Each structure stands twice: as structure tokens, then as C-alpha cells.
Image 1: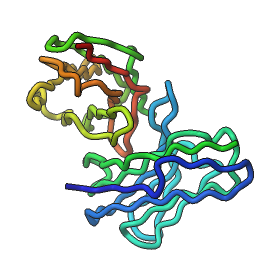
Image 2 (image 1 turned 30 degrees about the horizontal axis):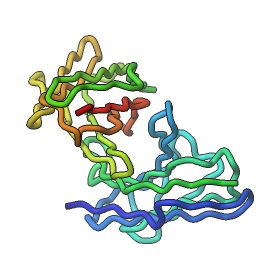
Image 3 (image 1 turned 90 degrees about the vertical axis):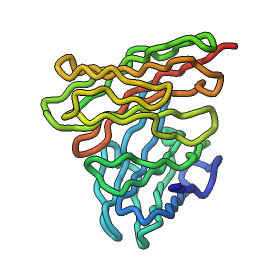
Length: 113
Length: 111
């Protein structure tokens, strides 16, 4: 079975802090994704990566950056956390981008105070 | 850009009964993929069922089936013999070049 893990289930940070969310997948998938999930809005794509050191902006990249130094690991970085970034963050991976299902991690619920 | 609409924010069903969750989408594409994902409370999102647009036959996975109406751009999920473990958020998703999700439907199965 594909396993996607995220470094924290719950995280509380202060406004202005730099925040790192880590995601690791064990299926040698080429593609990895970061979404944020908010009530009534579903999942919105922040960034995705189709290869090591490659990244593409999604729909809402502002205030975020990403890093993919190794194939299995995809990090989401909040350079200076703000209260409007309080949300559930989901990481996903897939073998192909255009037709493959995505496998999700358990999510990180981030609260910025 | 493609949009996905789930018009039912919340639904409930009695155990053992059948429930249908609605999903419509907007696209000018001819070939694409559609998915239903399930997110149980405090648990990981998992794939329930998948449909390729070029296939006319509706996908089925045990108690889960879809009604795919390509011309109407509709992709509803039917859950038969509902079980307590079906309680979850359900997301409809459209994929062409990237994955687009609906806002979700929170389904509660009542004993």
C-alpha cells in the first residue's frame, strides 16, 4: 500500500514564524502536491512538483514556498505565518499527473495565533 | 478553468438505506477523469471510485456506484446499504491537467 506521511497532525505557531510542513511518500511517485482544505472551499492546490528540484505553482501559492530535494520528500514552507494561513494542509502523491489517482497523507491542522 | 460543484453541503441517511451524492462540473474537454474521495473523521482521504470520461459504462466498486452523464456533466455517487463506517466527507474531483475538487458533502449515516 502507498503510504504518505506528514510530520505533524497538529501544529500551533505564532504570527511571523517560519513554518515547515514535511511530507514523505514511500512509493517512488514522481509527483507530489500540497493542498489546503477549508470548509466550504474543498481542496485548493498550493504547489506541486513533478520531479526532484522541480516545482509548479498551483492556484494559491502566495505566502508559501516548497522544496523537493529528494524524490520521496516534499516540504511546504510558510516564510512568515499569518492568521489567514490557519487551515488543514494535505499532502498527496501520484505516479502520473494526468490520469493517476492521488494518495493523501493524514493532514496537518495548522493554527496561527 | 474547470469547476466542480457539490450542491449538498450535508446529507444524512439511515443505516442500510441508499443515498446519492450529487456532483456537476464544467469543462470544454472531451477526455478527462472523475473521482470520488472519502475523508472519514480525523482519518486519511482515500479514493472511493474513479471514472474515465471515454468509458460509457458507469464505474462500480462493491456498494459504491456512479451515474456518469457526460452530456449533462454530472457525476453522482450512489451508496447502497449504507454503513456507519460510510460517515465521512465526500469530495468529487475532476482531472484533466490537474485535480479540481468540489467543496465536499458531509454524509452522516444514522443507526
